[in-house]
Length: 441
Image 1 (cartoon, helix red, strand yellow):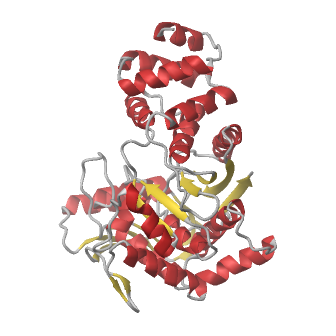
Image 2 (cartoon, rainbow, N blue to C red):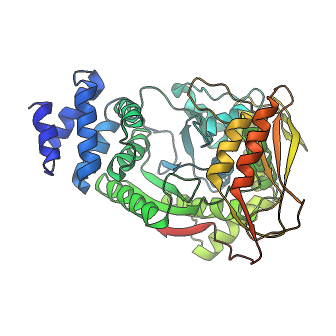
Image 3 (cartoon, rainbow, N blue to C red):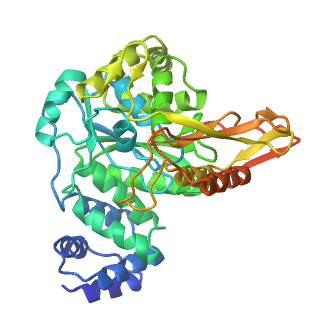
């Protein structure tokens, strides 16, 4: 078996055998296959695709390329949630304590943000003292204490995927459903999940720009999950405009606190409720409740203090500083440095999440390279969103940077220009999109 024959087979639209895929992943992991041959096969996959068996074999082989986690100390079915990313996505910090109130225990391995897609680890790291580098041998202690633990991804988790993703990024081979689906699912399977809920974002601020593309990706991942023996469900959510009222690390965590104290934005509550509902059912922790009663109970626990107490326990268990009545203590304070005002009167027709995300990166809330540092206090607050009425001169957004940070004035004005491009105001009131666009099981 040799790599040249494998490339030719996929170039000629043949299905690769399990043995060929196994040979490929092993060679990528141990470095015996040169980058130029790996890149050639990736491009052939982009052009000619993979069937379900090929995708599943690639997924399982990438998952097996490093350590695979097991959680014998969890009571019940190990579950995980993945989001394909977006702007203002603060779902995980709400979701973990919420499902923990139903007895769903979770070990969540998350990454840092890159570009305008925020990282869950960055958000938790904005809390003073919060430890995001938990040793895997200590996970059980945190789970026993609170029912959950969150930590940065370990480098030996699906290492083949990391190598392939880095190559895809520089060879124009990112945009491929078989490669995207296998990349996501390999990390979830290596992370020990037996049941997976996928938040597949859709719109200007997401990787999949339209519903049909998002559904194709969701379908592919569900088929992989089925063949791999993992219960999988996908929730397709709107990311044409930012989620909630803030984007930026501290700003989003402040919104998380508002949500667990019963003052959350409706779009955030809708998304977290649906994902919690699916995970509780996957974990078989419904306690005999009907679907309608379960949804009502999920919403009730966001406002009656039940989720708040679990959230507080999560923060304190991992060293985060907490003040009763005020919530977490953050490493900086967001400073409201500029408002962007509407040049027109009318109804907000559009708030392009991609341009908002780019503006947040200019302010310091995101990274362009993995080595970049971020300003935890930077971000954007939204006074109006799609469907809201504005008068000329009304504030659309507030721009923030951390009190400890300094930002050049020209970058502030560049961010303002992006926001003015992101907002579209017109005379007719638009129909609001639902936060949940579809659920695929």
